[in-house]
Image (cartoon, rainbow, N blue to C red; front, side):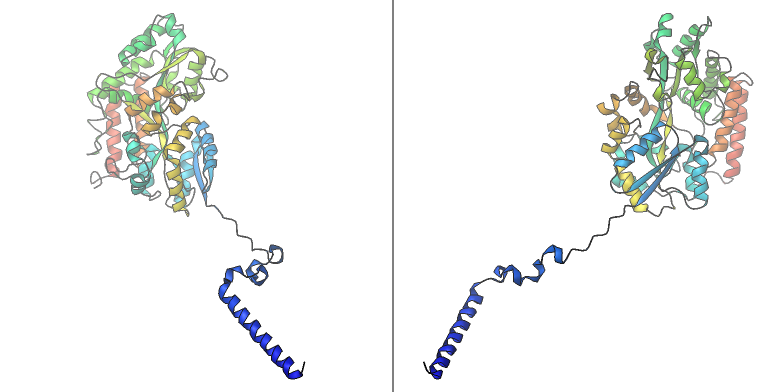
Length: 455
């Protein structure tokens, strides 16, 4: 073949090849190109992906006082997925000061647990955040026991402004030694009124074998106060007028005098020296089988059902404290939880509280020894089956009422404890004690609010 023909043949082959290539490009989608022609699909070993940075959870802290519910809370918060939560359980005597000392330094824990009476003090100092919108929008507000929600965070009274939400509900229950009652032919179910209770206590005390009724009559803390308060309210009295800030004529009303006279008679059915009794002495008297009955916080008697902790455990039955002549009211116990004004994790704190106050978490909380203020949880089998006194708790807690949460609460409460103890132990008459109490409490409040109640 000549060179010319070779060239022509070669040229035709090239043209034909180009035509075929062009046709192939039009018919074959780009996605079907061989893998070798896709740079993004190189083997991982030759181009390892960059490591993603670990997600850092926010850190939150809580302060409470050292008792079993604090330990239970420390365990509960381990289930919270969106933050690392540390629970500090400090000695009871240091609880208030550890929180408010940090407040004064504009620091401390993110979500403090405070006693209900501390709310005014914390709000006046600007130490806690307004939680009203959070409670309305992020919690089952209508499910809370109304008086509990008010007591654990509303300030001022009846304002509808909230600075705390319930974390630990508590109320007093009757603990009755059924074995002692049987010896005297008394039916525990017969104690319908405080008068019924007094008669039973006097009957048991009369022969000196047992004490009838033992209570925390000591004047320190808020002990005798919360014992007497539920008597005063049930007799139709009040501690003060929250609308006028009046104590005189209210704290020493005839109803309150009658309630304190009753308390003085009830005191006589207890052990010698009971004017100095606190919770520990009451626990000893009930668990060693020397006292027939008491009314005490559920949070205190949580170990009384265990024979290892309480020798009389098998003999104890539980009941709602009785009604008074005018009403059926019980003292509120427990605490609320707030958000510190100084937290650096405000959003995380509110997100945590939303989880904590949910029905699901509250249901788990009560199975661990905590107590909820949600009606739906109190009505649940999960709550009622956890402890033998829980069904009584569910019946008793809606009857609660609390006393003043003013910033001046400590001075007011201290005066109340002093004079109530003097009256109960016979060192003053109830009328004399309450007259002095009303006078001195009025002086405290007039000095704090010379222009009358704050607007």
